[in-house]
Image 1 (spheres, helix red, strand yellow):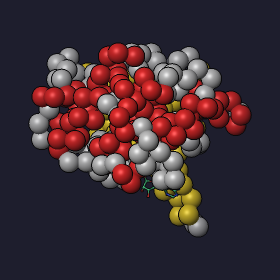
Image 2 (tube, rainbow, N blue to C red):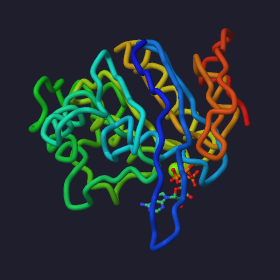
Image 3 (cartoon, protein in one colour):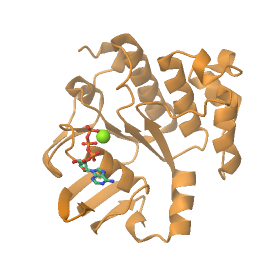
Image 4 (cartoon, rainbow, N blue to C red):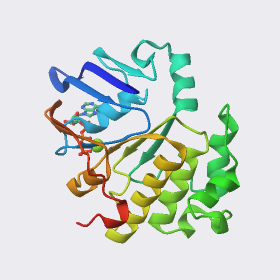
Length: 232
Ligand SMILES: Nc1ncnc2c1ncn2[C@@H]1O[C@H](COP(=O)(O)OP(=O)(O)OP(=O)(O)O)[C@@H](O)[C@H]1O
Ligand SMILES: [Mg+2]
């Protein structure tokens, strides 16, 4: 197993109120596969993904990635883990507005141990010709391509995507999904993706449904649909 999450629990305290967000999550995914997390708003999806990616701490349970227990790492080792192993993609791209597309990627490439070539990655995502554009000179789909290139340049073993197409229209979403599927195939990158869109599940190997901080369904999908054929 590449991802192994065991009995993960997390609650938040605000004043005297405790909200139990993750109530014993168990999840696993093999290397090189795509997993999709579905569930209603507030069910704990982002909290789960952030703990897997080392952006947040859990209360109990464990996350093991590639035989490495992430939930036991010191802060320094956790920073190295995030920096070298994990690529994050968010709904709103999170590019730095004052930097060009190329420079946004360079920032990450500069701090990673085994970066890939910026131009190669820009070519892979179809954005080499827009390398010198600023984010506000790009469409939403183009900004997301740059964000994907930024996540990929560090050659991550795990790509975590939180609603990567949440802000995009249908056809642009499908282009982004095609790109993620291509990355998965070409680099064997394991992808764990949150979405509200049930249709997106059909392009993934494993589909998890989350409700109230628990996995209520865990399904292996034998019939992978190419992203270009997904309809919603
Ligand atoms: N820092 C925090 N402090 C207190 N409560 C929080 C915090 N972060 C998240 N929560 C609460 O935890 C619950 C789960 O949040 P989370 O963001 O994981 O949900 P989600 O499934 O990603 O929802 P969405 O689909 O809307 O993105 C929500 O009730 C939220 O209000
Ligand atoms: Mg969320």
